Amino acid sequence: MSTRLASCSCGQLSARVEGDPVRISICHCLACQRRTGGPFAEQARFPRENVTVAGQSTAFVRVGDEGSRATFHFCPHCGATVYYAAEGLEAYLTIPVGAFADPGFPAPNVSVYEGRKHAWVVPPPDAEHFP
Image (cartoon, rainbow, N blue to C red; front, side, top):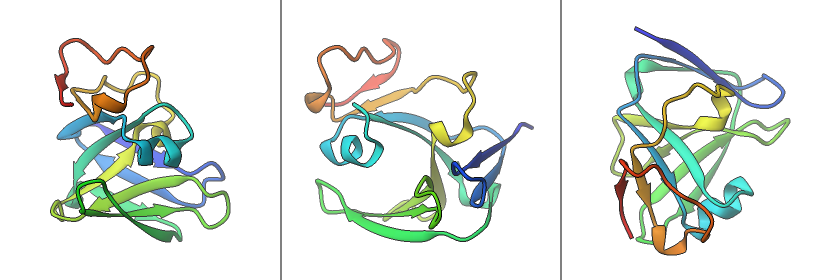
């Protein structure tokens, strides 16, 4: 079983995960673009019991386009988001893939809000695609 460590930029907040993610997705919604400062967000979902969080976080609740809430946990020192919990998916924690700083992390298998995707972005062809 694999172990991975995600952390904020200063290292104060971290999330250690055991096992593989149950889903790796990219989201092209405008809120994710604003949150990440990039053209999309990539995240990996893990069973909550496989994630061990260490350090202090500040939380921000965002209401999504369809009305569901997500609680983002970020480092109060450097501001980097390390994990979040989505309403309706209480059994899981989701971690931005960039927090792992691992170029070998598996590719996303789901691409959502493609109607807001930047024209030059090309999701993996074998991923599930949602408008």
